[in-house]
Length: 404
Image 1 (tube, rainbow, N blue to C red):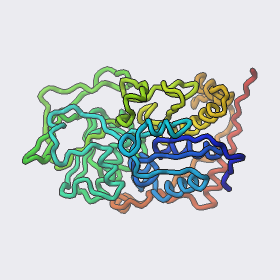
Image 2 (cartoon, rainbow, N blue to C red):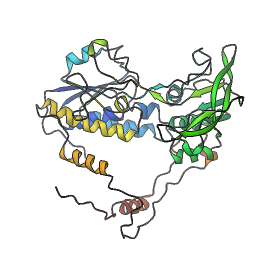
Image 3 (tube, helix red, strand yellow):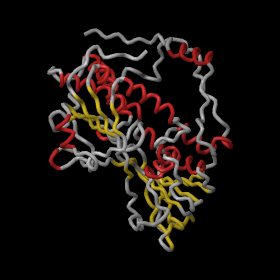
Image 4 (cartoon, rainbow, N blue to C red):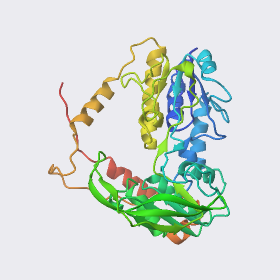
């Protein structure tokens, strides 16, 4: 049963972006009775969860259904509306009492290698590659050999999607070893089962092209040195170790970037060197009164659930602001911050309690079947197993008691 607003308010909130953060914020504001309008550049909801995450991991009908629920609560979504092109920030500020910016990381980081800016056919940034595929398009139909550069989840999604659009030879290049890959372990395992070819400890140095088309990529071998600021060992090029992999599609997926070009100079939002929006962590307000922000455009590329959590918190801050209350963290949030800071959970701690039942794992389609299909790869639990799993999770009896 859907919650209903206790009373309709005359205040209006404009949200930029119908991704996880924007939709979540809209839901909680609608629940409190605010008039919410969301501006979305694409023709459907979900943001990067729809355009960046393949259907075999997150089926599109589920996203659409969840957004329909939010719309049924009175939220208006203006699709195919790009802020900065179809409507300006000034127009939004003039129409709404508060604004929430929730754009995702829809750009790709540069590899900074020779030939990257030459406009070769077959050179396709990772985020664009996934966006095209998730909108039902083959990014480069004449290409059959694919090399993806990177070690994160975007890179893994790119190689796994390549098989699903009919590419025959799919390779992933990563400058460190498998151990250092930031992608989820389960995603790496699934890609291995689908017979993606992994090339570790090598990095691109030059794009090879003929007649304006990619025909190969030159790589150099790497070795690991001392740890860098990320805690992972720094890759160092091995002089004279260059070699070439033939390919007609090269996909750099080494990182995502935030595009804030829709924010005009008159708005005067403060941003970081990495082009993320600066907010007050206490109020979630930007440097401009009445404009709030959360999600990837604040934190940089992150998990879907983190963006959704930011949207929920922002809704409460916007409510405080529009109600004339002090905009601040709630007691529950302060307690959560406290527990996070002191690190209550220790996986190695012996607390004298016998462990319960082991976690069940979802059944998956066989690799030889799933690699050519965008059908959801995980089957889900039968009802009886789902109940058992929920029972296991809810019977931990590990309680923290705090006296203040």
